[in-house]
Length: 140
Ligand code: CMP
Picture 1 (tube, rainbow, N blue to C red):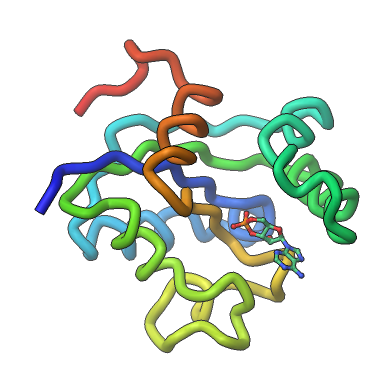
Picture 2 (picture 1 turned 135 degrees about the horizontal axis):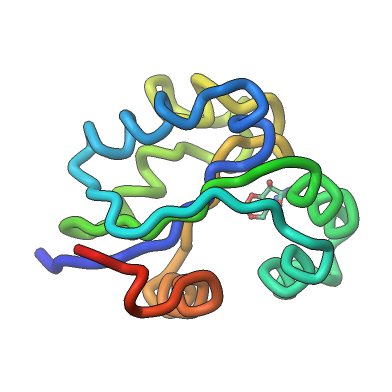
């Protein structure tokens, strides 16, 4: 197994409901380690840049509005197979389809207000981490 790093966001619906600790506990219980973390509020330009890959999708404008609507927590997670493990703990994008015990099943409100983001590949993890953190901010 490989020690990997992945990128994670705790989204505005979760920070608004004071759920950051509960989300992080689920990640840590799954064996993931937080090696970088900051609470920020994104500008429209920040959200548009991060989600540029979705710019042609019908939900893009709503997604950008939601992701700039309140504070978010940006994180780098480290662990064995961290990318797949994080996605397993998050559950399906749509909470109605998420397995029981997952973050989205327990906390997400709907497919947009779905509490967390996690990188879906090694390539995207590296790109998302580089977009949001400087190397010296990652202490693992
Ligand atoms: P995330 O993992 O951050 O990646 C893109 C986000 O778009 C997704 O989580 C959801 O919050 C949001 N989204 C809103 N509507 C949809 C949809 N119909 N399909 C996929 N993602 C959606």
